[in-house]
Length: 249
Ligand SMILES: [Fe+2]
Image 1 (cartoon, protein in one colour):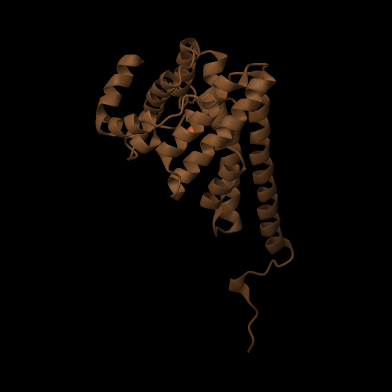
Image 2 (cartoon, protein in one colour; image 1 turned 120 degrees about the vertical axis):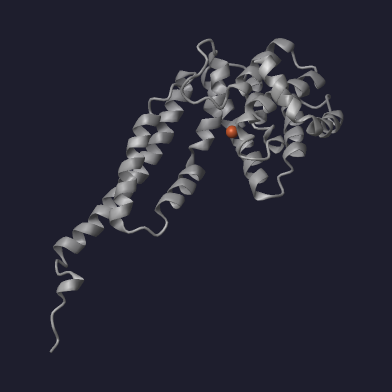
């Protein structure tokens, strides 16, 4: 992982200077989570929508991380730090081609930050590994620990929460008619069945994940019923089609 990380980081050397400056301004006397939030804010500069979404997403992932950690009786701080910084590398991955590198770049940033604030090295290494693998969906490394998988769980729990449901459904449905919307509902419900198989790192995350999927399922089932009623209305109450309009002569 380290070798891969360094080859990717080499690409971002010019950004490294910016990172150096931001890290130099880090206040190591602050509580770690406060310092991490300040770092994230300085990196993402969330004054434009794309980075504001990313910044707020990281805050929300941090909230999910706390829920998972408390549900598992872990000290919440390390997992919250990992979730808060899991996408810190996005500003250095400027194109769609570079996005797949964001996990490794984020892990590199976290590694440097945790060293600056003198975080315990044993915790830093699991935090960075969790960040480095947080974007792997199904083929997660066999030796990944529950903690490391939980960074990805915290990320996905926000990625599939209510905001994402609104964005996805708006993108898919828009102004489509009932027949087409019905097909989309069927496809989405099949996709949800596949998502339900996604392995989680902990029992707590599994419960939270299934609850999140239930929200999606209920929405699409409800929409499916509404679209079916629309078609049924036309077929039962108003069977006459436009083409067979009565002649007025
Ligand atoms: Fe994320």
